Picture 1 (cartoon, helix red, strand yellow):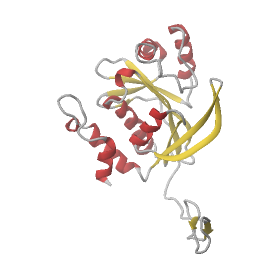
Picture 2: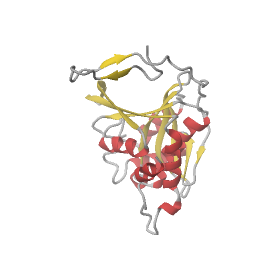
Picture 3: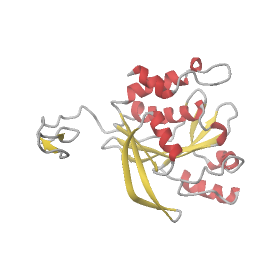
Picture 4: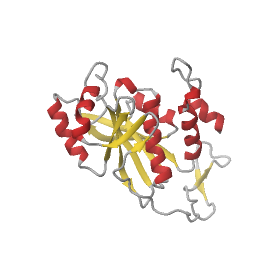
Length: 251
C-alpha cells in the first residue's frame, strides 16, 4: 500500500545503504475539486499589471526593453530569440498572443505603463490541479526588483487563490543559474533534473524541475506580502530583509 504521497521508505539494520518500501496507511481521499482555467483578464498589483499579451499595444516596448543595452544574455536559455528586427519580433508575438496554453502576459509597469517583460501560464491540467509558469523574462531595468517579484506573486496568487490549483511548477535549463536561484528565492522546491529533456537551439537541455504546493502557499503568500511591503525597504530602495529570511521567520 502507499500513502497519498507514495510509499514510505526505511533502512533496516544490517542492510546499510539499502532502502525498502514498507506498508503505510491507505491513501486519503482529497477534499478538492478540479481547478479552473485562467481567463484572459489582467492581474493587478501595486507596481505592475499583468496584461494579456496584445501585440498592438505591447510589441514596441517589449522589443525595445529586450534588445537594448544589458539584454545580451536575456535570450540565452529561452528556445527563441533574440530577434533581428521589430517586424520579426512582432510576428512572433502575434503567434504567442493567439495561444491559450501557454497563455501569455505582458508585464506592464504602472509608473510608465510600458511593457517590460513577459510570463505565461502553461501546461495546465485542471483535472489534476497542476499548472506551470514559464516563458519568463524581465527587462534589465526591472530584474531583481520589487516589480519582478510582484509579477511572480501575482501569477502564484492567481493560480492558488483564484483558480484552486494544487501544484505550481517552475522549470528551466539546468545551466540557467539565475533562474534556479530565482525559483528557490521565490519558495519553489527543487525536485531534480530531467536529463536530455530537450534540444534547444541545437544544444542539449537538461531541465531542472521546481514546484510549490497549495499546502506551502500560505507561508509563501505571507512572505511575499511582507517582503513587498514598502516598510521592508530603506530610503535608497535596499531591502531590509531578504525574501528567504522573511519566509524563514514565518516558519
